[in-house]
Image 1 (spheres, helix red, strand yellow):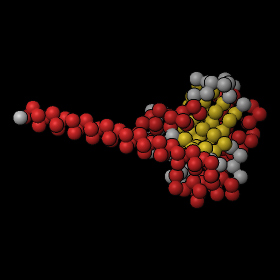
Image 2 (spheres, helix red, strand yellow; image 1 turned 135 degrees about the horizontal axis):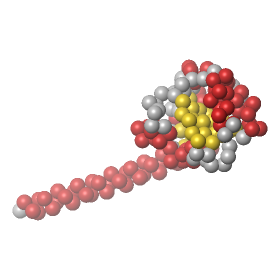
Image 3 (cartoon, one colour; image 1 turned 180 degrees about the vertical axis):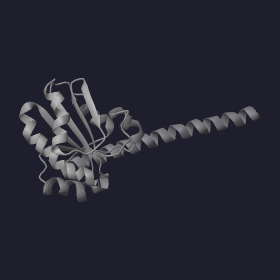
Image 4 (cartoon, one colour; image 1 turned 90 degrees about the vertical axis):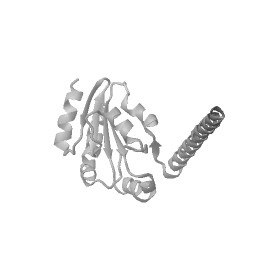
Amino acid sequence: MNIKLLSIALLLFVGCLNSKKAETEAVGAHHQADKKQAKGTLDLEVYDFLGFEKFLRKKDGKIHVINFWATWCAPCIKELPYFEKLNADYKDEGVEVLLVSLDFPHLYEKKLMPFVKENKLQSKVVALDDPDMNSWIPKISEDWSGSIPATVIYKNDTREFYEQSFNYEELKEKLNPFLNH
């Protein structure tokens, strides 16, 4: 009798696991569909970390400057003009600036896109929408606490990470070793 009861409990447990897996997959598929729709309606590329990771691994001989920011972050907003100036001043020298918004998805239409348009941002802007920050933050840098602004500068296999805000002179100073490398 106890073996039958145990068998029934085990079958119910396995059934619940399979149901939960199917539910998780359905939610994930729905979430991806939402991202594609947001991209189409907002003219904004939205990535989960898996999709975004390609920006961190390019080996094309260019210098990549990736800044993590949000519209609600005052130090981020203050330094954005310096990244824009860097983009304009160094694009002919193989420097690509990528501005990665960590704004909440419900703010893309109300805050992020109006901000990008009003400030006429010329650097490429993408949104990173992946709630599992504990898994992807250390993949960007083991030293990153998760605070913003934060910046990665890399060229091929040479990489530096900065969890700070910059003025233009400081940003150029961090870029110079990559230009001479």
